[in-house]
Image (cartoon, rainbow, N blue to C red; front, side, top):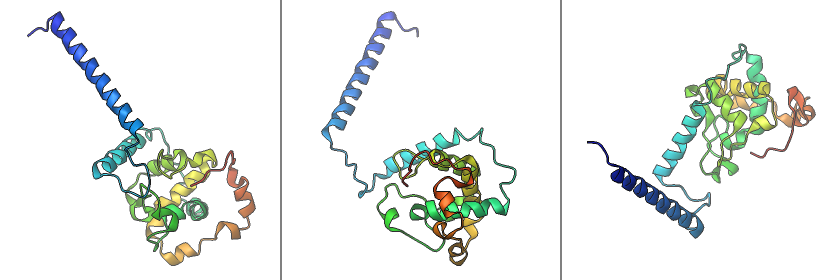
Length: 200
């Protein structure tokens, strides 16, 4: 059945009116302050699922052009990434044999325990998230302060070493402050250009 001009105008007006009502309701909801933004209360399961899936699909849609380095499986690359992980990531993403941390306890959403899930993650996905971060979480965009070489090193460690590493093996990774390149790491070693301070 062909829609008449009058019927079409009625449909358009109804859609516009509905949109206006929705926008007004959304504005009233935001202005009311009724939504609790504190990180000490869990979100509803539906909200958590929706936000997580949005993040996963957003990253997946942007990793097609990410090229994994040819030396990604080189142990030397993972070794450099291990030091970065220990100095930058442990507080949130934990270490083998560690179930929680003071910082992680207060975060919402909870950062993933990477040792438990890295086997199932595409290295391009890991690289993208480390480089660009994730809004409205505690995940910073480390690409603001570290170059791709350093980020791929962290990715290699997370993907190739962390899932099978024992607590004792992880403990033997030299802490940043004890390494001979500690000063250079803090001030731009390994090709890093620290443009700004990034807080995890």
